[in-house]
Image 1 (cartoon, one colour):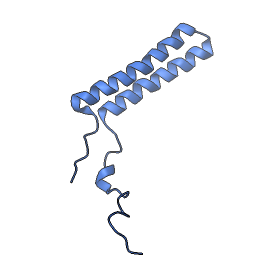
Image 2 (cartoon, helix red, strand yellow):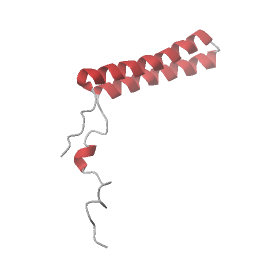
Image 3 (cartoon, one colour):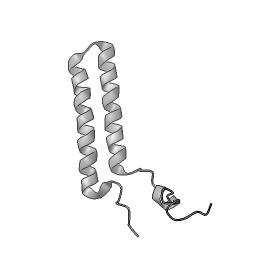
Image 4 (tube, one colour):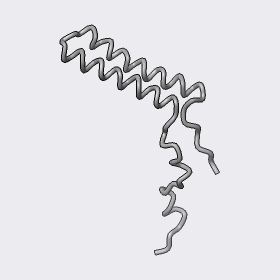
Length: 82
């Protein structure tokens, strides 16, 4: 069976995976959300419900900050079409 471009359409080049999504926006969001889960876990262990809701709020803040940084150009650049 001969390989045609249609058969190889699902294959991506190494250039498509050069950063694996490692951008300032992504890392900032991940760090904030990791801290949020740590706060939430500690709150559950201590039985401190207000602190738990602070952790939940931090998850939301992490998503918003990541999206805002992406909008400022600190996220992954769009793929160039050929």
